[in-house]
Image 1 (cartoon, rainbow, N blue to C red):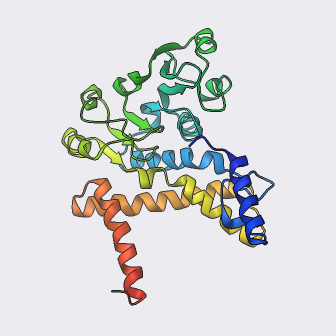
Image 2 (image 1 turned 30 degrees about the vertical axis):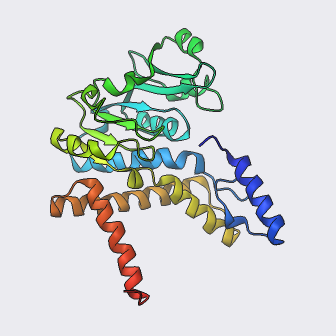
Image 3 (image 1 turned 90 degrees about the horizontal axis):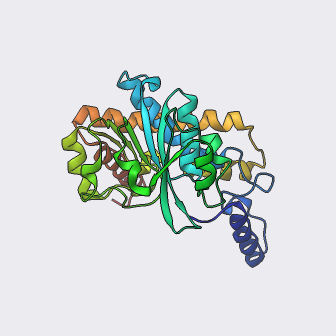
Length: 281
């Protein structure tokens, strides 16, 4: 959080100065042209929507028939909003923190939020200029208003511990899906409430894995000293994220598991199998 590609480059420079060698794959998220991968800034948000798209396909729900409310407007939320609207979905609301005012605001518009439009009036921290938003026809609401919107999909893509038992009751009965774009945005004690309400959960370490997946791609490209065009990065990213989602979804369906539990089963199983093959178990 609160870092950018230049900070990654500074850390790489320091590491290489300490070790006296060239190790471009040591850290990822670097600027393009300095060992960074095309598509890295979009990757986490796109990964969220690749997972959502695959779920909606399995549930036979057209994306065009859905609406979403998103918390955050940094790289994850902005690019999730962009891809979701490109697929035909309608973003009803986004919420973000204002560094200037020291509080959060939510933004909504009758025809739907235009992510590209709002991106044009946001600062380097992802905060949206409220006065410019009002001039563009947006309604400015309190920051927590994103949670209670009458939408099909909630995408908390900012901070951890944002959906708790204390505010869970604010969620509309219409909500069908929660996509954890942030790390740990839903507290563990909300999981039974989500299950009881019949909401489909895409857990964070699956849903937001697009960023770390693209970081792996960056490391591979650095090691090969061969960098892929952006369309190839996105093709590989969608393939990887869709495959990961299917593995978790199919296990959840087969065993009647909550999606978070199914993801844990797969993760623990892979570690255990690796340890067994090494002779540690």
